[in-house]
Amino acid sequence: MARRAYDLILYGATGFVGRQTVAYIAARAGAGEKALRWAIAGRNRDKLEQVRRAAGAAAAAADIVVAGADEPRALNALARSTSVVLSTAGPFDLYGSQLVAACVSQRSHYVDITGETPWVSRLVKQHHARAAADGTRIIPCCGFDSVPSDLGAWLLVQAMHKRHAAECVAVKASFSIRGGLNGGTLASALNMLGSGQGKAMADVFLLNPQGERVRDPTLHADPLLPHFDTDFKAWLGPFVMGPVNTRVVRRSAALLSYPEAFHYQEYLRVGTGPVAAIAAASLSAGMFASSQAMRFGLLRSLAARVAPKPGEGPSVSRMDGGAFHCELLGRSGNGHVLRGRISDHGDPGNRGTTKMVCEAALALLFGGRRLPPGGGVLTPASGLGQVLVDRLRAAGMVLEVDP
Image (tube, rainbow, N blue to C red; front, side, top):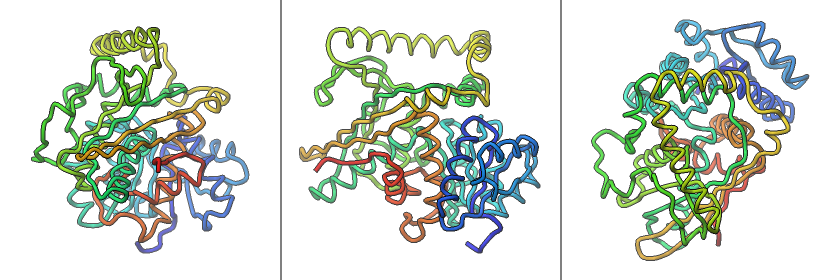
């Protein structure tokens, strides 16, 4: 890519996660991340200047770019000026489409934190072919949705082949999380529910290449009921992020040619013993009831009224006190078993997402020939692979497969 005015532009920098990305990149640029040339962007210059000031002296070198999400000319100029765009401006179905179109047209790489799979599906239909032909990497879902799931499955597939010369045909994951919800995440979820995207969200193969045939679709169905898992030795229930993460992992499986029989599933770890069994049953029932209730506009309006507003989120102390732990187990067709884990300190939906998406953007900038080949509408594993794994490890995240 020819040298441009900026290496990286952070779009949506005045939002809750956006402000955290500014602080994160400022710290990296201030620590000498190869003399990073960067800017922050959004629709309001005054708010952008406030964010830059709040990030301290390390952010003083960041320029400001003003571009509204509905201003194609400004967005094209923004994309043309930078090698990589990192967007945290959701709901992406409302505010992300023209920015991605600009990145594809100007051959600028792109990452974001969306979990809006129906929107990602439209990106695939509209832009994958051209981005692939041009070598442009458009990589949504680079936050807690869906980096741990996608990289975890990928690491087990790679390790199974390397250690046992065998194909990994099944991966399952159990998550333990401690953290809070920000208003932007809720706004994205409510927008999907309120705009008639429920049927698309329920399609377990939503992000798979069109026309792909999957062996035994029943293995991929979203779990609805709790169960005791003998491998994890714990009661597991449905994981609220599973209907996003599993679709992303399946797209990686298709793009990276995992074995035809490969299937992936994930759960929330509840605990052990009879109390955990009751809790897992309550969790399953509650998730089903809430998903049905949120179909009604009045209840969505009530949820939006009492929950954090866009731009709001947990306190600093609550985010710093959060954590997540993902335990994974992979099996080969001939009986080999591997275990892995991905974990980190900090609220996964805020601190974790910030680290993941920022390191994804920096991986695009500095990964060079170590990046997987090709372009298109990709996934964290298919677009960034080992480069992102290495960067996240260097940033303090645990990503490991047992010997």
